[in-house]
Length: 155
Image 1 (cartoon, rainbow, N blue to C red):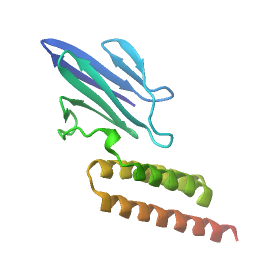
Image 2 (image 1 turned 90 degrees about the horizontal axis):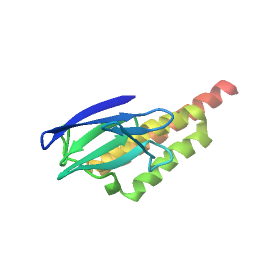
Image 3 (image 1 turned 30 degrees about the vertical axis):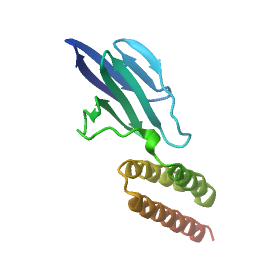
Protein backbone atom coordinates (compact mmCIF):
# COMPACT_ATOMS: atom_id res chain seq x y z
CA UNK A 1 0.00 0.00 0.00
CA UNK A 2 1.25 3.45 -0.87
CA UNK A 3 -0.31 6.79 0.10
CA UNK A 4 0.97 10.19 -0.94
CA UNK A 5 0.09 13.70 0.24
CA UNK A 6 1.31 17.18 -0.58
CA UNK A 7 1.21 19.82 2.14
CA UNK A 8 1.91 23.48 1.44
CA UNK A 9 3.51 25.41 4.28
CA UNK A 10 4.69 29.02 3.89
CA UNK A 11 4.67 28.70 0.09
CA UNK A 12 6.78 25.51 0.12
CA UNK A 13 5.15 22.25 -0.98
CA UNK A 14 6.22 19.26 1.11
CA UNK A 15 5.70 15.72 -0.19
CA UNK A 16 4.78 13.05 2.35
CA UNK A 17 4.59 9.41 1.27
CA UNK A 18 3.72 6.35 3.37
CA UNK A 19 4.68 2.88 2.15
CA UNK A 20 3.47 -0.26 3.87
CA UNK A 21 4.75 -3.75 3.30
CA UNK A 22 7.57 -5.69 4.89
CA UNK A 23 9.02 -2.46 6.26
CA UNK A 24 6.81 0.51 7.02
CA UNK A 25 8.43 3.63 5.60
CA UNK A 26 7.64 7.31 5.64
CA UNK A 27 9.31 9.50 3.04
CA UNK A 28 9.25 13.23 3.76
CA UNK A 29 10.69 15.38 0.96
CA UNK A 30 12.85 12.44 -0.15
CA UNK A 31 14.13 11.66 3.36
CA UNK A 32 13.38 8.13 4.60
CA UNK A 33 11.99 7.46 8.10
CA UNK A 34 11.31 3.92 9.36
CA UNK A 35 8.11 3.46 11.31
CA UNK A 36 7.15 0.91 13.92
CA UNK A 37 3.68 -0.14 15.01
CA UNK A 38 2.79 0.45 18.64
CA UNK A 39 0.77 -2.78 18.75
CA UNK A 40 1.77 -6.39 18.10
CA UNK A 41 -1.55 -7.51 16.67
CA UNK A 42 -2.61 -4.72 14.32
CA UNK A 43 -0.70 -1.98 12.55
CA UNK A 44 -1.10 1.16 14.72
CA UNK A 45 1.06 4.20 13.98
CA UNK A 46 0.66 7.81 15.13
CA UNK A 47 3.66 9.81 13.87
CA UNK A 48 4.09 13.58 14.21
CA UNK A 49 5.68 15.67 11.45
CA UNK A 50 6.35 19.37 11.99
CA UNK A 51 6.97 22.01 9.32
CA UNK A 52 7.57 25.42 10.98
CA UNK A 53 4.25 26.09 12.76
CA UNK A 54 2.25 23.40 10.91
CA UNK A 55 1.79 20.07 12.68
CA UNK A 56 0.98 16.98 10.62
CA UNK A 57 0.05 13.60 12.10
CA UNK A 58 0.35 10.40 10.09
CA UNK A 59 -2.20 7.98 11.51
CA UNK A 60 -2.21 4.36 10.35
CA UNK A 61 -4.75 1.86 11.64
CA UNK A 62 -4.58 -1.53 9.98
CA UNK A 63 -4.42 -0.90 6.25
CA UNK A 64 -5.92 2.61 6.46
CA UNK A 65 -3.58 5.59 6.47
CA UNK A 66 -4.51 9.27 6.65
CA UNK A 67 -2.68 12.51 7.28
CA UNK A 68 -4.00 15.15 9.67
CA UNK A 69 -2.82 18.72 9.10
CA UNK A 70 -3.37 21.11 12.02
CA UNK A 71 -5.91 18.77 13.58
CA UNK A 72 -8.00 17.85 10.50
CA UNK A 73 -7.60 14.71 8.39
CA UNK A 74 -7.09 15.35 4.68
CA UNK A 75 -8.92 12.20 3.56
CA UNK A 76 -12.00 12.26 5.79
CA UNK A 77 -12.13 15.91 7.01
CA UNK A 78 -12.64 14.59 10.56
CA UNK A 79 -10.79 16.03 13.53
CA UNK A 80 -7.61 14.31 14.70
CA UNK A 81 -7.84 12.12 17.80
CA UNK A 82 -4.54 10.74 19.16
CA UNK A 83 -4.22 6.96 19.14
CA UNK A 84 -2.92 7.20 22.70
CA UNK A 85 -6.49 8.13 23.73
CA UNK A 86 -7.58 4.52 23.14
CA UNK A 87 -8.41 3.03 26.56
CA UNK A 88 -6.25 0.13 27.72
CA UNK A 89 -9.23 -2.22 28.00
CA UNK A 90 -9.63 -1.97 24.21
CA UNK A 91 -6.14 -3.45 23.79
CA UNK A 92 -7.16 -6.30 26.13
CA UNK A 93 -10.14 -7.02 23.84
CA UNK A 94 -7.78 -6.95 20.84
CA UNK A 95 -5.54 -9.56 22.51
CA UNK A 96 -8.48 -11.77 23.49
CA UNK A 97 -9.98 -11.60 20.00
CA UNK A 98 -6.77 -12.45 18.20
CA UNK A 99 -4.98 -14.92 20.47
CA UNK A 100 -8.12 -16.41 21.97
CA UNK A 101 -9.59 -16.88 18.52
CA UNK A 102 -6.43 -18.55 17.27
CA UNK A 103 -6.25 -20.99 20.19
CA UNK A 104 -9.98 -21.68 20.05
CA UNK A 105 -10.58 -22.11 16.30
CA UNK A 106 -7.31 -21.70 14.44
CA UNK A 107 -5.99 -19.38 11.77
CA UNK A 108 -9.32 -18.31 10.29
CA UNK A 109 -10.55 -17.22 13.73
CA UNK A 110 -7.29 -15.31 14.19
CA UNK A 111 -7.98 -13.42 10.95
CA UNK A 112 -11.54 -12.66 12.09
CA UNK A 113 -10.13 -11.38 15.39
CA UNK A 114 -7.63 -9.14 13.60
CA UNK A 115 -10.28 -7.67 11.33
CA UNK A 116 -12.66 -7.02 14.22
CA UNK A 117 -9.84 -5.56 16.34
CA UNK A 118 -9.42 -2.71 13.88
CA UNK A 119 -13.09 -1.91 14.41
CA UNK A 120 -12.60 -1.84 18.21
CA UNK A 121 -9.91 0.82 17.90
CA UNK A 122 -11.88 2.88 15.37
CA UNK A 123 -15.02 2.85 17.52
CA UNK A 124 -13.01 3.59 20.68
CA UNK A 125 -11.54 6.70 19.03
CA UNK A 126 -15.11 7.78 18.22
CA UNK A 127 -16.05 7.20 21.90
CA UNK A 128 -18.61 4.51 20.97
CA UNK A 129 -17.93 2.06 23.79
CA UNK A 130 -21.27 0.24 23.42
CA UNK A 131 -20.49 -0.50 19.79
CA UNK A 132 -17.05 -1.79 20.83
CA UNK A 133 -18.63 -4.24 23.28
CA UNK A 134 -21.20 -5.31 20.68
CA UNK A 135 -18.45 -5.85 18.10
CA UNK A 136 -16.45 -7.92 20.59
CA UNK A 137 -19.47 -10.11 21.38
CA UNK A 138 -20.14 -10.50 17.65
CA UNK A 139 -16.52 -11.47 17.06
CA UNK A 140 -16.63 -14.06 19.85
CA UNK A 141 -19.86 -15.52 18.46
CA UNK A 142 -18.35 -15.77 14.97
CA UNK A 143 -15.30 -17.53 16.37
CA UNK A 144 -17.41 -19.97 18.42
CA UNK A 145 -19.61 -20.77 15.40
CA UNK A 146 -16.47 -21.29 13.34
CA UNK A 147 -14.98 -23.61 15.98
CA UNK A 148 -18.15 -25.73 16.15
CA UNK A 149 -18.36 -25.76 12.36
CA UNK A 150 -14.80 -27.04 12.08
CA UNK A 151 -15.40 -29.59 14.85
CA UNK A 152 -18.56 -30.89 13.16
CA UNK A 153 -16.67 -31.34 9.89
CA UNK A 154 -13.88 -33.26 11.59
CA UNK A 155 -16.08 -35.67 13.60
